[in-house]
Length: 144
Image 1 (cartoon, helix red, strand yellow):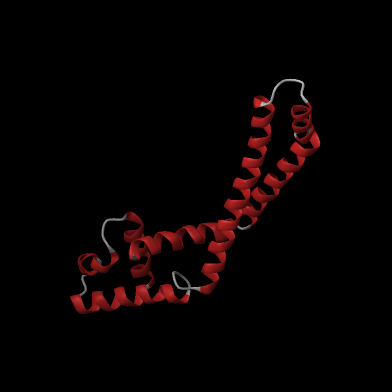
Image 2: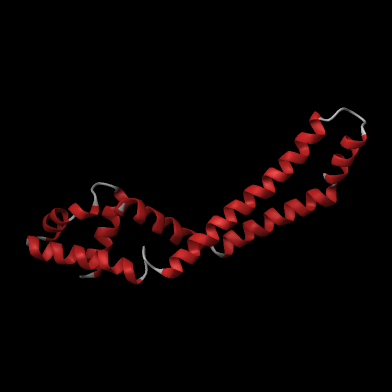
């Protein structure tokens, strides 16, 4: 398989024009190869995923990290929203409302913002892993 075949198949997969099991006619038309050669190219391209794609243990790690990032970020945001909501629904000038207000002081809000900032920073540092995770998930959906 040549690099141009791989690039073509990757673009074809991303376009969603066909299920990749039916991609051999596209190879035949585009590169002028016979059916057997097209199938060989397609099988080799699909096998390449086992060495760095869908079945890669490292890819599983990346997906777990991405999922944990999103769960943690969601928990931070929900906690902050819950505190603000409680201030609004509690009766004015009660001990409970004052306690919630203390929990949403600048320092706590700052802690929440720092946690969110830290998670966002993590996402930037691991941006390539996150993009890779998205590609892996797309490939899994297409192969399912």
